[in-house]
View 1 (spheres, rainbow, N blue to C red):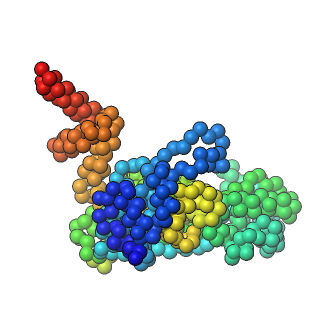
View 2 (view 1 turned 90 degrees about the vertical axis):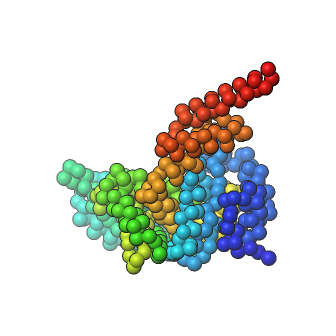
View 3 (view 1 turned 90 degrees about the horizontal axis):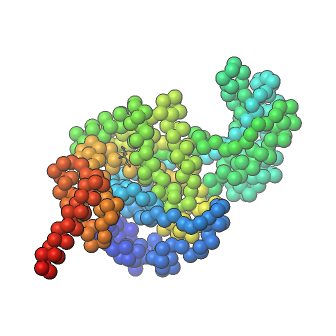
Length: 436
Ligand code: MEV
């Protein structure tokens, strides 16, 4: 009988890699073919790279892990995360467990349309341009849907609206920027919206007598934002207050906001990578949205509410589940299957939740034990490896580094090098001693 995800999550991190794969198999999250594929390193076709980029010389490997314990809108997920930074996966699983036991995660996507931009850099008169363009708006929507976005229209999407914005040139005059609003359904929509914008270039020039300078999508998709809300009941009031204070810090100070948002992206980017989505586009959108009122601020907010703690993430998070790398890369396809999201919006909601939960873990650590204990402790293995320790030496170097950490509250690569040197010197002298 198929096991429930909540049953395989218990003690998952303590299992060997093979046992984890078998547990995912038992829960139906992976199929036998997936387990075989990923156990062999996840590279089936060595010419795959050539299908994506030019000048290919090889592959860059990232560890692929899974985030456990997530229950979002009442549904359990196994969330794939491709990332190299120590402690990201461990921290997010721990926080997800905390929320699972004493709280909830709810999500929604508000709005449906992505934005394409058409710039007319120098218009004679903005008001005339706007009038001429808007007079042809319905016709332009109709021809875009008929000639370019017909596939989307069939799936229930397509171009919905056209707007004109006046953007100051900075020299007292204005440029005109046309916004094309399009529902991309389950695609990320980059290619199709760019095609629509380029298609509209000629009619716009004809109707207005002005010149189009360039066409491209915007990553600041404030017309379609994803919200995730975490609520934790039964939280130590002192801890809730500390997290609220940390959140205020990131709201008010851009220096702190940048680091806070990096921590949110620690959760978001690995899922984007694992599912073959464009993480640069999402990052650009999130950062731009984070300074929509003129100051760069935290993309999350935490506040005390009803004797508990509430956290909110809200930002554009446009992803696709059809087209692009998502449906071409075998590992991304496997990850998508494992995750089991049914639409691009559901994927976006899951990713927003991961970002918010990652942020909670960071804020809790920062306002309690500090980053060193939570982060560097797990980092000792990397330091040992960096110092050149061999497999059998790693636990010994790690143990020594942990002792140094407890006493001095900090450790570095030079500590690891020193420890390894002492260890080897000790072993050499005991061997010499033994043989003499
Ligand atoms: C480190 O990768 C991420 C943090 O700096 C995030 C934060 O400061 O909120 C811990």
